[in-house]
Image 1: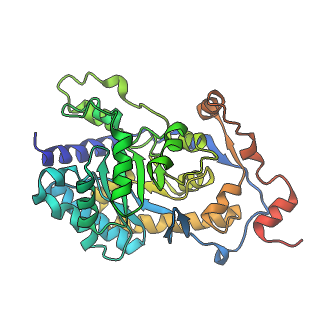
Image 2: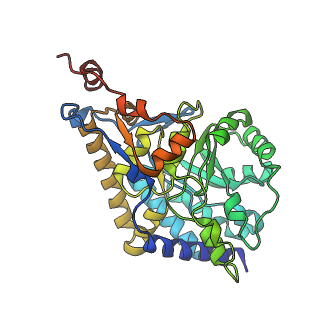
Image 3: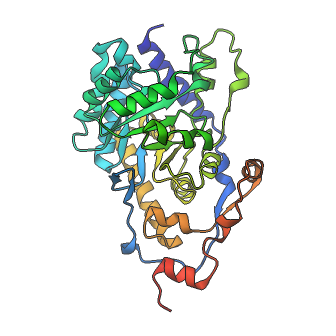
Length: 364
């Protein structure tokens, strides 16, 4: 099977998952404690965020999806237009197809051509050579490089990798050699605390936990197998909410993606420590079902509603959401108990009138 056909299959199978989703995930086990006097005025709210020396005007980004075929090139063009019009950052899909076949370069380059002044991230796997990583960055004039980790995808993939021991050393070589910040991300199975703690020594600037709850690439690759005999890997890994809780007090800046369905999930992820939040499958579904103008409107609506939620919660900035009280319940709470994570302090981050007044700026 050609690389282009595989990329098209990924889009088709991902959209089948989107249309089949039940709608629930572990973000539903995170809730804000409502403080009726915590609200502030909307003009006080900023959506700007910073991490690892990077400044974004909003804490939302279009995460890695696709590229490598004529169809996915058209998708990337529309995604780039949506990023340009809404002001969000955007990441390319894996550029391995470009390394194998340079004739598909335009299907990735369009991300920069249609979005000349935006924040664009290139994307490679952990086996890429330093030279190829540089080629990816140069092709997109990328502001940062994502390196994706995907052992649970490679394992059922008929043509997938089976050698993973070299990944840490190669990540270190790439990070030292590309000249832009490196963000290590999963593809939907989550980054554990142990993984996040290992990344700074490799020269990594940030980690995108990209947990379970969105597109399931192990399921996609199993669907490409003749006998679909890896079904037991469906839903492998930790949810995005679980990863963020596992990352409490980790010094490495953390981004969140995977199963982000609406602005409340964005606020939940920010409250659990994410510096910014990405979406892929949900945005792609809107684009393919309703067109690029609908996607632009959706992103704009998400940003407007996120600002409204910050106003209600008394959070002047996305970072201030980390000072709001949140409750953790259900299986997510059980995960925290087993991992030795005390969630009680999350529910008591503003336990006095003085703390609330500091958050809202009140002098009463």
